[in-house]
Length: 361
Image 1: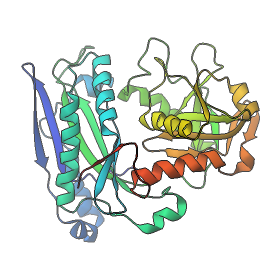
Image 2: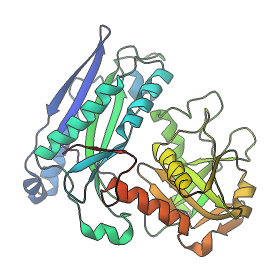
Image 3: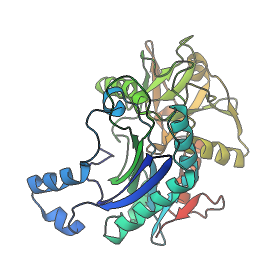
């Protein structure tokens, strides 16, 4: 699995009380990384449980009962020249703020989000909890590269009736993370499930949105696919996104299409970066509706994007008995070019002339 519950020991926590956000850094029980690696399984489990439980968080809350929570995901990548750097964390800060407002919570200040994410990474790295750059990652375009995954999320105050959170907490944890998708599966299938509806919370990075995504992706995996793809809720005709990623279709006409964002599609940070990289290459890039039939009939390359997915090619897409293979089942030239540039920037192997990376240590 890409994600790990081997949580790094330094955690950030902030609470909204009396109209103010007040934060603190907590150093949970730990040994050195080498000592932890040498521990037996039961001892490691006990130590990790001590990190993953936070004593004063309410058991019964609007979060635990109704999924009223938002979260973010960003990475600190080990750099080829040494140290760690975050990829466009200001964009995560802005989206976290907008998501909290969308669920009518007091929003967390973007500047506090940014500084606390940096500090969590920095403090964990000082304790030895940070990935180190490996030259062998370059051989597969960083598809198996590791990073430190940062997960900011909200928890509500105690509550049992259906209501909103007026005094939320923000918690920031970090864990090691590697490749998200299985290398043995490359295709996707259109799901019968509906991820988001108009006037809903699809545009918000809300915890509750991911229940349907988890079910659909599990069903896709059982059927032998890497990913699932959702169609719109109203006409059941237009492609929207994957279980946890945006999607792109490079058409035979030379047009690169990604579904336009609205209130049912999450505005991805990697998505926006890919659009910019494609435009740099002179590729006619359009955000618009694209029907599943157009996608199947006219696509020569297809890929998905996201913090976890990076830029991952889709070998094929199945829908109602059709299974269309793109580019002969091989990674396309444009997909590879964008992926290699993006990953190169993120890991410090390609010059960051965009100013996207924020050095931490």
